[in-house]
Length: 357
Image (cartoon, rainbow, N blue to C red):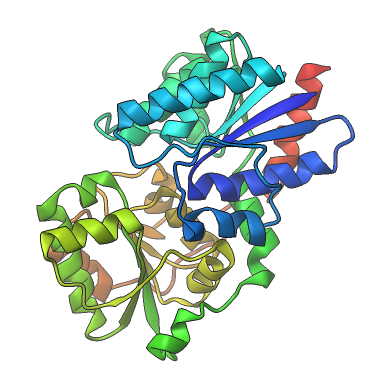
C-alpha cells in the first residue's frame, strides 16, 4: 500500500512525524511525502525534518507567500501531477491549511481515497480560512480520523453517518509527539542571549484574524508588553507577523526570538508559567505539559479545554488578557483523558492497512 502524505506547515510536520515513524516500521506500507512549501523558512520547516527524524520530502513544490487562491490553486496543480505519477492508494492530509485542502481536492477529483487526520474540528467561525479548509476537507474524505469525542459529535450533527465515508476516533497525534519527544527537549540558545534564568511566559501570534487586524494586533502587543514588565514574555515570531508589526510601527517590548524547532518549543512549554496563543495546536500542547493557555481568539476548536478550566478565551481585548493573566489558576486538573493514550498514529496506520486489505 502506498500513502501519499501532504504537509506544508509547522503543525503538520509534527503530526506527520508520528505517523511516518509508524509507517517506516510497517512492511506493508510505503510513504511518499510531498512538502508544498507553505512554511519555507528553515526555522519553520527544515529543522523539523532534521530533529524529528522525518524522512526528507520526496517532492517540494516550493509554493508560499501567495494569496489564498493563488497558493491553493498552484498546490492543487502540483499535487495532481504527483498523484497521477505516483498512483497512491491513499492521500493523507493533516489539519486545516491550504495544503490540506489542495491535497484532498486533488485526490478526490482523481478518485483516490483521502484520509483526514484531525477531522471534525469546528470553531463555528466560517470566516476563518482554517474553518473553511477543514469543513471542505472533511466532506471530501474517505476516512475521517477524529482526535476527540467532540469532533465525532460535530460530524454526526452534520449528518456524516449518512455519507459514504468512515468516521473514527483515534486520539490526537500531537499527544503522540509530546510523549515521544518530551525527554529530548532542548533549551533554546536564545535564552543565553536574553539571560533568561527565572520565570517566563510563552506567547505565540500568527492567526490572520489577529495579524491582519491592526486594532486586535495592537491590543495583544500592548498586553504582552505590560505582562513583560513583571514576568518575562518570550515570543517566537513568525516572519510574516514580524513584518506586519514592523510595517505598522508597533513597539514590541518583549523577548522576540526567531521561530523555534519542536524540541525547543517543548522546552518552552515545559518550563513556562503559562501560555498566551492564537494557535490551535499550542492550546493542546500547553495542556499536555500541564500549563494553562490564554486563547487570543474569540472561539476555539478545543472546547473541552475551556470547559475543564485549563484554558480561557480572552480574544484580543487588552483588559480581558490582563485580568486573566493576573488570576491564572494553580489547581487545574490536567488528568482528563481527552486525546487518547498516545497511540493515535498506530491506530491510523492500522486502520488504513485493514481498510485496504
